[in-house]
Length: 341
Image (cartoon, rainbow, N blue to C red; front, side):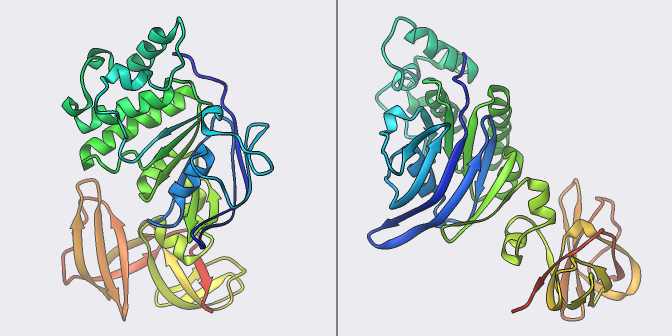
């Protein structure tokens, strides 16, 4: 199966409301052709609304949406069926009365090559042997692949995915997520993937746009988001952390761990964000091990230091147990620090 040439997406000052209730506020976002962008945010922040606006299922209150060089919302309005946008919904939205092949064929215009296009989409998603089956007889993972095959069969230039793995159990979600990631990479299709799960966003997204209360607060690569979050809320949302109170001046923050290197813009009272892998433990008399969580590939150790709690990521063989007295050392290059208002 061949795919259409990928198009970029440009969103400018997009706003939307439902019955006078604002949902999106001046949203701006750029997705490069062939890029996989993850849209990460808590429930109710406007992620699905943004997807529906791009797909043309809603009209924005103001602002503009560009797909490639074409304006599809703003001064003009292009209906959904002319946007060349595929969408995979959270509940997959399969037609229960149609077979697998019938579902996949639904969005393809009748032509002499229609059967071949359906067959290509089924083969791509490893569904060729299930073409005559009905959706109700399929497993959750198989239904998810049918929904993806149906979205890709019309050869869209942009693919939108609205939390497509949320209805799968943990093990299957990891397996299907990897399959989809590989497929999107191989196809080189422009995609926007909505999730509230940081792991999914970081795995699937070439870049990640973090959304909060209808606004994009930061867009960057997973690595930059994790190590250089724009504020404390983003730092907490994109990964595990510990927070220490301190006082910063000239790139150094004083706190219960001693002197830590921080950004030079941080001054005065600050919240210092430390990632678990930026700390190390050894036996000592500074802090107390409060809890040990063993995951097989690593051990997370919670320690109390004065009135503060720290999380330390250690090797699986870490010998510490609850009640041990330990010394905590900062081993990272720079800690994030945010001024306290």
